[in-house]
Amino acid sequence: MKNWWKEAVIYQIYPRSFQDSNGDGIGDIRGIQDRLPYLKDLGVDALWLSPINVSPMFDFGYDISDYRAIDPIFGTMQDFDSLLSAAGKSDLKILMDLVVNHTSHLHPWFIEAKSSRNNPKRDWYIWQPGKKGQLPNNWKSVFGGSAWEWDQSTECYYLHSFLTEQPDLNWRNPEVKKQILSDVEFWLERGVAGFRLDVVNMYFKDALLRNNPPRFWGWQYPRPYELQYHVYDMSQPEMHPLLRDLRTLLDKYDAMSVGEVFGDYPGDPNKAASYLGNFDELHLAFDFTILFQKWSAKDFATVMRNWIRACSPENWPALVLNNHDQGRSFTRHAKGMQSEARAKLLATLLLTSRGTPFLYYGEELGMKDGSIARHQLRDPVGIRYWPINPGRDPQRTPMPWDTTANAGFSNGTPWLPLNDDVNQKNVKTQSTQTDSMLSWHKQLIQLRKSSAALRSGTWDELEGLGSDLFGYVREEKKDRKTILLNFADKPRTANQSGQVILSTHRKPGETVSGPFDLQPYEAIIL
Image 1 (cartoon, helix red, strand yellow):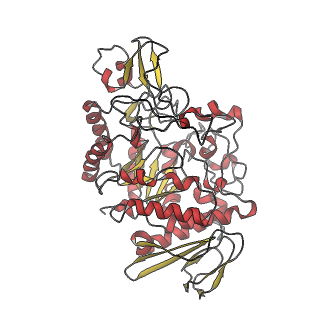
Image 2 (cartoon, helix red, strand yellow; image 1 turned 180 degrees about the vertical axis):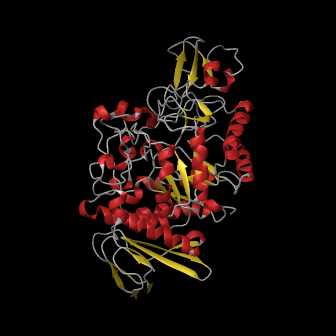
Image 3 (cartoon, one colour; image 1 turned 90 degrees about the vertical axis):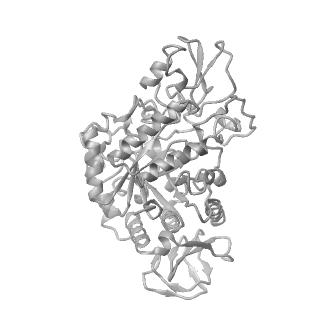
């Protein structure tokens, strides 16, 4: 189906943490294949796998040393082909993570590039001559320190926007573009249905390498990276023709792209939408503004309104509440005994709004951030900035499947500790509970699949609801759904009328006629 991605529900898997099949404590490809029946039953349409390419794992796969091979930690190419085949039989598509702003420092390209200033691969990366101690400019690494690293053997600096072990590619070199597009086609030929593009707006840097202007406030201070406006080390105009060429290649295979648009806190919907082009660049882009909102109907309404407007009628929003880089929404919006009610409300928002929803593994269970002791940290961000920033380990803890040892994730010692509530929050337990988070997600996904309005209809915000209510209408021909969300811990009155399709507090089939009271944290679809 052309444009299948517009009506899909996409499920992100962090492979290390999903299912271990061989007892080494690390999730793998065979483990994912073993859990395909669960994913099919959940109702999702595509699986986005965080990186599984060969990597020395300095950044847990986001430092790739071979774009055409599978890292042995996760399995073999035969395992991956088996997963593609099995997923296809279950009508599930597989998306890969494309990490091409940088490679690993152990990639053969970089090993060649640093072997000599005259090596043919030298210009595949960004080098600046200089005297040690005199940096080429003031750019900072996302992970701390300068973005420039001195290479003693060739007496030059190379650019790394992240770890020193992640040198940035030089996308101004046409050979780099040719090679990467060839690597993309390699996976498309195997049957991959698309890619999530890591830090997609960072590929090109200012040709003159000008200094970034200072910023006198940073949201994660004292991280130096936040104390600059990133004018020259990202979001350069050359990205747009490149994305149009990539779109042409992907469309040949009916494949899709979704881009992580990196930028200043708290995000910029217009910048994210700009990489969609005129329906000719990225298929989808993430706007992460919603991940940084406080619990407020007004704030969530503003974010959704701005994102949908930024995408315009021609383009299509991506919708996301969680991912591998940010704390889980259940933790961000927790409020004691009401935490699950809030999580169900947000799930309703995610799965009934206009756009393609992305679920992060365990989100459907109400997984929270894990508690990671300092000696258990694995993420370089957490190790460097603990205790100010705990890093990304808390949102990467293993998936809880049942109440057996290690929650059914592994027969060995898990690479990260399990959450402390796995005996209550696991797939097996929630599968038997009609009011569980898992059951609610299944009902929402099933309703979305059965409703043209929720899959592809218009989105019109309801006005005059009061400060604690957020509501909107989805409509496609004769299919009309009204969604009302009460963000308050007290009843709030709405004037809408209709038949209940789904509600966190009422039975389907019930008729409501305004004015009526929504219960605290009630989500209702009429």
